[in-house]
Image (tube, rainbow, N blue to C red; front, side, top):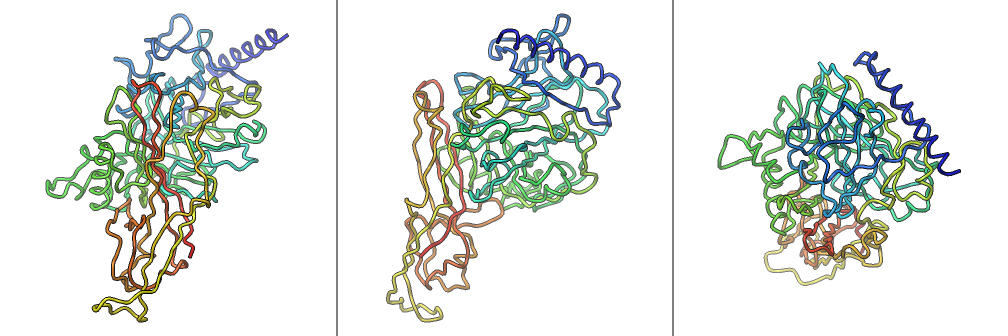
Length: 504
């Protein structure tokens, strides 16, 4: 009986692909291309590491995305990062040997870095108005709360606020016969195995967009030269992408976009960032590759055996998009492709696309918003103390270890890798530690993270007025290292930062 049911599903899938191909030939490119999958579609087998060509019907050949000769519309730093030994697993695949659907795609997931990467091969023609690629993930249905998308588009995570939509714009033009890839970092949710596909689903959409000007808080430039990602309430680019992050994939993004002033590389840089932000992020990326986390709150370093300069860095930015920043069309419009979430209790019977990899995604998350304790001890002021009122305190900061738990994805990592906490650091924004509050001794170290300055208050004393917890919130940066048991695979260092409460 089970075999008969499976044949029935495959027959429906082939018929669906045939209908899409016929419809795609007649549709005007300006219209959205509808995608509807009512029956569960398992991934077609794919030996992506060893094959030169994707599985296609007789008479059709498509090179794999990373092959020499394939046309690539995505970052060169992703080209050769696909090895199974480095943690990549096949989740979905619509390429098959029976019928080629319009704009076929497949998805890989990296279990050591928590990255999901969607590859699509464009077969549609006529993208005359295509300037940029716009893609996004959304949770629908979204009947149970999950932090899955909380790492996308923001460098400081508030665990009390779960995001359900993330959108990104990438500097590449849509064209037929071209491979594209969009990458997203998934936050670990230990409750995924208790959910059902009727309660929680993941969708991906793909559009093309026109933008004439962009600013990330610095100079206004005429083109988007880096990937911009933002959490949002929907897929309307104009209405949502005003605050987010610049994603730096690859170590050379800053070196390739410096300005003309050799002594100040960030001046008039081609990314549109303020000069100080550009220089600080460039320094942080370099130090991170050398094992020192600095000037960053969200990043992944390492994990790719083919590239010792592997990096994914998110930099907060004030985004301004001008001109015709509206969607010109869509390959996969709202609500997008219906992806069964790996690890869901009934994922293998889900409507839409059934995951071939079926364990929860993400590497780690935390259970609650951390608490940072302030201990203020009144002391004798130094001779040159001129603060008002004339009370002098030694303010100490420590993370309350009972306030939250670090949740690692042991269901996946047990037996194949070890995780270790490299550091947990406290940072205070300028509105908490401010010269107007008459502080005599500031924390020794400061970091410029994106467009904001933070004071490193980890096990540090700030002398002066008693710090008022009502002035603002702290953040806690956690650096976690994933070391695969296979010594040929380099470790991954994951940097994540969480909003924290200041308490006396």
